Each structure stands twice: as C-alpha cells, then as structure tokens.
Length: 386
Image (cartoon, rainbow, N blue to C red; front, side):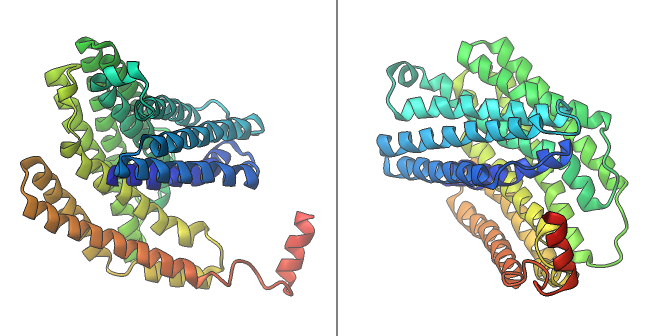
C-alpha cells in the first residue's frame, strides 16, 4: 500500500498536474482546457486511492475499479498532451515529447496488467509470476522514472541558474531510459533471458548518462548571492534524487543480468527505499521547493517570504532524508527491523516537515493570488486579456 500511495498516488498525480504545463512551455502552446486537466487529475487521484485501498483491504472489486479509473486518467492525460502538441507553435516531435509519450504508453500497459490481475482474469493470474516484474519495470522505470528524468532536463538547469541545452548526455540518458524498461518487461513477458539482459544493460547506460548530465549541469551552475539555503535545498534534492534513481536502477538491473527473466530477480524490498523515498519523493520535494516561489501566484515580496519558509532547516532535512534512505535500504535488505523503523521515522520526519513548510508557504499567498483589482496594472491586465 505505501508504494501504491507514493507512485500511482503522489508521483502520478503530480505528473498529471504539471506535465501539461511543461509540454506547453516546450512547444509554445496553451496548456489545454482547465476542465479537462481537472477531470484527468480527478481520475488519477481517485483511481490511485481506490487501488491503494483495494490492495490494503484485499478487495479485488475496489482495486479493479481504481485501476479502471486510473487507466482512464492516463488515457486522458495522453489525449491532453496530444491536443496541446497539435496546437503548438514550436517543435512537436522533439526528444522530450517523445519521452513523455513513451512513458505514458508504458504505464498504460503496466497498469492494465495489474488491473487484469486484481480483476481475476485467469490467463493473467496464471502468468503473474512473470507479469509482476514486468508491471513494476513499466510503471516505476518506464513511467515515473522516465518522466522525472525528462523533466530534470529543463528543471535542473533552471534551478541551478545555468543554460538549458540538449547535451549528448541527455540524448543517451533519455534514449536508454526510454528503450531499456520496456525491453526488460518484454523479456519477462516472453521468458527470454537475452532480451531481459539486453534491456538491463541499456537501462544501466541510461542511468549513467543521467548522472553525467547532472554533473555537467552542476559544474556550469550559477553563483547565487541570496537565498543560499533555498537554492541549496532545491538543487541538492534534485541531484540526490537522480543519484538514488541510479542506485535503484543498478540494483534492479544487476539482478536481471544475473537471473535473466527469472521472476525471482525482482525484489521490491531492495529497491523500494532508493526509488520511492530517495528518488520520487525527494524530487517532488525539491521541485515544489523551487516552483512555488518561482512561478506561483503572488508578488516579489511574497515569493521572498516563501523562499525563507521553504529554506528552514535545509541542511537538517537533506541529511535526515538521505541518511534515512541509506540506512532504510540497508535495513530492508538485511531484515533488521529496528533499523528499518528508526530510519523510516527519520525519512518520514524530513518529508512531513517539508510538506508542512510547503503548506505554510502556500498559505502565505492564499489571499494574495493577484494584483489589487483597483490597481492600474490589474486594469491593464484585464484589457490585454479581453
């Protein structure tokens, strides 16, 4: 249940919320109709909640209903992105839109396999030993990992204050992370050791190229003279998240290289801490830390106050989260319950503290979402908009 809350819940809903705006910015287009975006988010959020509840309660009908809602939300998200690109003034078939399209295709297949399983379809039940790792590779690496990696291409240089450019490392990273996960999943589906191992090698190469890109961008970073703690927390959260992603990929890929398409090669306990907490949740925290005061509503004074709030305890939260992830991974893999509980609490404390700070920063601007209606800039804005 925690994994389903974190991945279909937190990660996918966040992706559904921001991806239309990223695609619109890349392609110089409108981000789609608000009503459509709201419906997509509603389907994703309600579907993820129902799936998680069904898994927790052991209820096939609840999980199946959630899976269908979730898949409908994914299809809607794909349609929304296609419609945005259809009205674009800029490039429509660049590397990033293709990576996003591949990611959505991967998760639709992966979520469909799991939905058929909880629905009790006999062919899927009988083959679930091989389908389960295929489902995990498509959803975790082929969707969440690929979308976040593609987004880091323009978000991470922005956070660092350096130029966004399509480097060779980016092409290698997105190429490997786009092709590798479905190849591994196909190997499991076919029971083919060579296909699974080839996909694992491609994924490893993509993860290495992602770290190469992170290093290149970090060396070219800007030198900030204000809000050092806020800049440090957001940039290091993204960098550490990418590093944990590479660790998770290395663990999963090495097991595939050793066992081929044997379902025993997939072990959730070994990759849960680095992938879910170290990568997905940490990147979400780093992203909202940067985005709220950068593009959120409000004026410069409000954004300055938000940066101060979001920077509180930056070093402590970074250390607690990443230290907790490291020891949590060791505890899960070794079965040391006391270590798992202690470090899970440390990581959870850092995450909950970040959520509380975000809520506080967002509430600062709850009543200040735009200029004074009576002001001259507001009148000019209304005239331009009309």
